[in-house]
Length: 104
Image 1 (cartoon, rainbow, N blue to C red):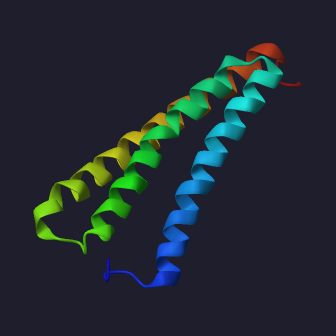
Image 2: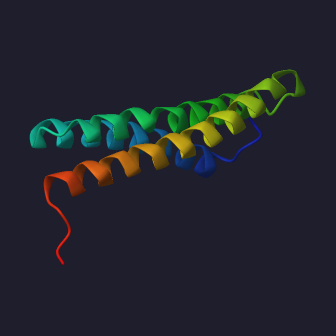
């Protein structure tokens, strides 16, 4: 646990908690609006959360080479998360455009 300073740990942990809060807020917003696209966006945020947790776990164990697989997991989840977020955002955009067509 000596790999990161205390302020850096604070930022890592706060970021994970904020991401969880954002997922919850997006889900609640979608439920209030009755639009399923927001639920897909919240679901698409999960790989990024897994990525952050993998990074924190690796740091927790002082970046030991024995846990190098966590770095690969983190990278893969980041790529998957970025693609999922892009797809969910595009789906949400198309859903919104279907409800109200763009002005001429």
